[in-house]
Length: 514
Ligand SMILES: NC(=O)c1ccc[n+]([C@@H]2O[C@H](COP(=O)([O-])OP(=O)(O)OC[C@H]3O[C@@H](n4cnc5c(N)ncnc54)[C@H](OP(=O)(O)O)[C@@H]3O)[C@@H](O)[C@H]2O)c1
Image 1: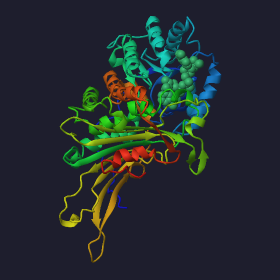
Image 2 (image 1 turned 30 degrees about the vertical axis):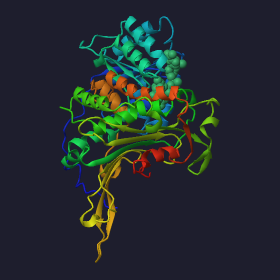
Image 3 (image 1 turned 90 degrees about the vertical axis):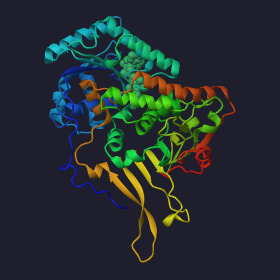
């Protein structure tokens, strides 16, 4: 396997944009007693502030806010354990002590006076630490709590106008809606109280380094962009394979399924980034506009086509890492009559000049035989001339690995040394971890920092959310009304149902082997 030669990447780096200036602020974590706060948000904030060892030493206070009462000391202890377990940087006693001083907790979110107390506590914190009233409300609560939370923030006078000297911003987690109508409703209800410029809808995939690198790869390498489109590309595959099962998330997962959980957000984001037209600038609005336009060109799965263009599946018992595992219906908390899909594969088309006629194959599933997210761009076959007279040589392919081994590889053909002519496929392989030194920020660190800096580039617009739901809704409607569309079983540890293989094989193609 040949390695890509990148001569000392540090010496030859080109700084295009500095990390942004981040004003001092207070982050209020709604739902601070929950899983996301513990596993992701507080560890990410710790890393951002960690004694200057993190990605800068950002000036902020954190106020956990939830319904249940928790003594501040207990909350700090719980978060200390969370940081010890989940933080990218090791827990350091001195750093933790400094961090914990700025970490507070307030219960009573559901009490009549809860939001007035929130205002008073915020004012106290800001006075104690000399912070300006810049406020970020991170809604790490279930979707059903969002409408009330934003309305009560406004009633309590906690939302400043956009453009005011100090900012009020709200961060909204996925899922945004359960279907197109509820997504519109959620957007409407947040937009009643916050302007779009104050809203940050998170898709944590967009915070991943490799996802951000898609833009750099496409728009700073002439060779790729010139080949990007129907003239040179045979097809594109996007795979998000998970090896774990539903675990303890049955309450959340069973009403959703793979289409809502993965395709509506992460996979359509990847599709938009890989296929969009070059934005007119690197401004957030320009990038978001390009992505939205791409999604508008994604051909809806028309009535009657879900059976032939979409495959859904559900895992049965099998193995994971050599260990026997249960099937989906045997998982704890899953109702015996569940019809939820844990796998989905889609064949889609983008109806614009660049991509006309190029199929995009998407697949995602739980309990698959690999844990990997990648985008595979298969270029067109060589003409049947010269070395390829027999038509056996494989075409070039570019594979972008998003996780876990971030990087990309380019499959080319080369002559094996020797007297005859023997041609072998070789991979030019770049692994970020071995090529670049320095820490890779966790997606939530990056995204939290961008919220503080007010940069929307990596956040999802209301229109994108609704457009992506519109695509998914046409499939949901067909699944909901046509009971002849099968829910195909696949063995845990396999790469999905055979029907998914047939979907791509019918076009004379294969899924990439992971
Ligand atoms: N966990 C993840 O990895 C993950 C990943 C992506 C997105 N998300 C999303 O992030 C949000 C939080 O997830 P989570 O896993 O942390 O959930 P969780 O563990 O169930 O915690 C939810 C938190 O919200 C509070 N809460 C519950 N019902 C509420 C309501 N009606 N109004 C206000 N607060 C309420 C709960 O605390 P009290 O009972 O004390 O109020 C708790 O602190 C959800 O929208 C989830 O879909 C989570």
